[in-house]
Structure formats: C-alpha cells, structure tokens
Image (cartoon, rainbow, N blue to C red):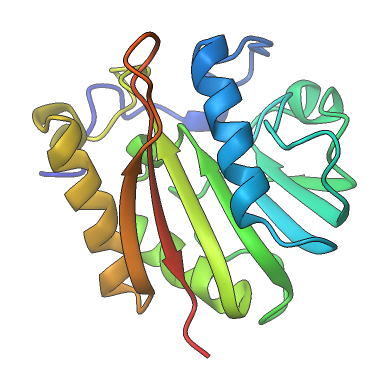
Length: 198
C-alpha cells in the first residue's frame, strides 16, 4: 500500500494536457542550475528523466547530448536542451530504451514522488550509467497530490530524503548523499545523489 495513489488512472491521460510551467520557484531553479554546474562533467551525455519543457541545465555548460524522457510530447518538443527524447510511462514499463553504460549523468527533477516502481526504475538508471556516473534526484514540497505515492505524502522533507536514499542504496549506488539546496527564502529544494560503482 505504500505505493498506492489517490488517482490510479492512466498516467498518460493525466499528463496529456501540456503544462508549460515550472514546478519550483525561480530561486529553487537557480539553486538547482548552480548545483548541476558543479556536478555534471563537461562533454557529458545526460539523461533528463521525467523531463518537461525545461531542464534547468546551465546555459554555458558544454554537454555532448541531452536525452529527454517524459509523458508529454508538446512539453518535450518545447525543451531547447533536448537533442532527442522519448515518451514512456515508467509506472507501466521501467525498462529504459537505452544501452548499458551509455550516459554520464541522470537527472530526475521533481518527479520521484510519482514512481510506483522506484526500485525497478533506479536499477535501470544504474544500468544505463557509466561507471562513476551520477544520478541527481531533486524534489521540493510541490506535487500533484493525487498522483504522489502514499508513502511520499506521509513523510516530511527529511523522511523523503531518506526514502530516496534508500531507493538508490537498494539498487546498488554508492556515495549516496542528500543536500538541501534551499536558501530559506523560496521553495525548499533537496537533491539526493548517488554514484554508479565502477
């Protein structure tokens, strides 16, 4: 029951109307962009998991390729940072259409709370990451409550960080750490990172 949701209807139907908005405020976006600048290596191949019309990547960061995943084609087409993208409901099919060890960094911004099969998804994330590659999962206190899993809704910010860390640890990631990126003046923002073992 921990991964039950208020709305168990078809997710592709729910996300069919495009939402060209940001789901965190401007200060949180700026903090996340700065954090990405510190952690994403130059010339990286990046998978932006559960993406939308914006990826919050630093404008001056040289990236070899950004692969987008999401649930709405209008949003993904509007994202200027994506070199290619695909639509997939990870709650129905967690297998990513990517080869083993083909990306350097995986991002998941304000989407982890909707995963009903997180261990399967993050096992796939580990599979597609190169050894030493990093996953960066960020979240705030905003969500679509009817689509968030029950355990997420029951936890506070610290509990959510522990939950995401558990996802990564159980799927074999190393050096799992949670950071608060908020400055106290805007939306809370937490990033949990893990490294694919070599």
